[in-house]
Length: 224
Image (cartoon, rainbow, N blue to C red):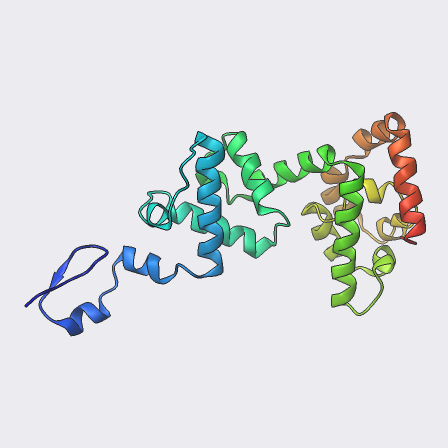
């Protein structure tokens, strides 16, 4: 009597041997319900839906046998680790811009996306997203969300700004942000300058006067 692995089809003489056998395909199926694997699978499906206009949904079997399995797992892990607020939005950007998959889990690729998204984002979406993040920050620090600019640690704020969590719409829409910028050293200011791009936003505030008036009004009412 022999025992065959249903995943790799390898044959074993003893049942005890196949019980401890762990091939790559078996490992992938055993990890099927892991958060990282589920996210990677959804991105894999999106990749084929957006990138190839495929009408037939990819199954987990397709994903588990894909040559790109490890690349999607790596990308999913990267997204979870750095807490990207919209993985699907980022993945669509990567697919539509035909970024090679081995560059997806790259800080330089992410930074380029964040800089562009901060400029493309509408005022209402930017304000909503930023205040929601400030509320999360406030809850973790047992304070009020509208104390963000006064209380947040400058080093942490640099990370927040460079990861796109705090929008330039808000930074330039309230004078309270100056209390944070005044607490930053030259190195910190240099790090965030590429993301809040003063020259670009100086021009935009003049061209989008109505939008910025709306932002200032909303932030004033929210006491941000």
